[in-house]
Length: 583
Image (tube, rainbow, N blue to C red; front, top):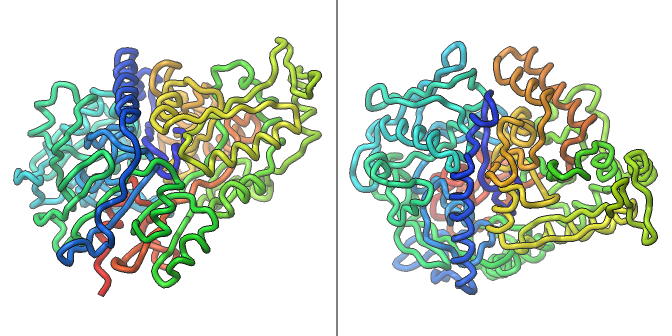
């Protein structure tokens, strides 16, 4: 999927199967998704400005501890608490998982590590085609009804029937309840690699959603969940989640609520952060040690561990990007260290390995690539463009065999100031080899819609919220069975990379738990990254977390890395239940 800022957004996965089976929406569903997303965009355009939260401190009124938080800058929001609405407030501003909870939470910092949640344990059948979930007991929905395996089975089956909601791309056949506390999911092929995304499935109440005519457009304005918080109040500028007094995890949460606030850009959000009006955020902050930590060194902190490799992703349905030599030329034109330093000031690190993997994946990098780094080489870039038939025009911009100028249009959200800086630096670097760059900045919702539908040229892509293993990194960005034709939504492989060898290796890895076979497949995928360069590694997306300990403690950090500390995504509910008022 494409990076949409500090959240990464929705994701898909899958094991095996044809593109038509891989949670890809048919034309009707794609049009419906486009109408849904664009309707939200239009509604946003009618609203103006974002109000600051009414709580002046995290102490709140009456001695209550109300955490003030924000996620991606969105501007005013439309009321939609459907946990599967990709442009809904919980997926953009934060709060997903706080009301409707996941089954379990994968740890992006440690391959194979999972935190049990609504499911307390799970077990695959020997062939990997059946997953049994043992669920927590004594759990109630916030309206008082009992949570059971029927809710889990209903949610999974609902996602399978509605591809536009199936953001995690589950390639299951069906799910069923076997008693009140046991759910079983059947898969057509071995599904070992789908485990993280089964865990991230947000469970909705069957007794409410089974009456919904169209779950794709359902806004769930009065959400009912099993989570630690319930919806207390809402405005387009933000919403307040209040402590659920009947939460199933005894004694939690220890804070009284979370107020999520909408901001129009990083600039306005960071101003609020610097002025002490936010306790939890996830934005790029210019000169963070001075502008944030320096305002209150005893209480203002940040932790930015890498959580996903981000790359330059081409729309590979466009002829000029289908030539591997052209893509390699673009790579050789880039100085990643300079890009990361100027755009992110060292807060996000350059991804220097041609495999595109994360530092926590170092043990999985093939020996032949361990000591190789991506470096800028202008003469090599020009030589590759010449090999591809390009010649410099009168103004120095390369002209292809078809007589067209080599122009790259970079898509992003206008709210993401750091990405805009990244693009500006890239413009200068690419000009050195004769590539003209234009920047297409839109609202977050519009850029998301265009990306998923294939209506873009080039942008930043990566498996944000999905890099739980090296396999996940490659499947998310390269699996042909997870993409879709232009005009239909593709939440993964938005580049539309189609390569039989890639899919064969992904399937080889997914079909077994034999480490030797998986290693062989993984090294083959690394060869494809290096030799065909379908995407160009750029930098490592950070789990952005700025947080205050003035009133609340228990945050994850480098000394206590129980989770990433990011304010959006499923891991945020884990963090919220670990926080407690400062004594």
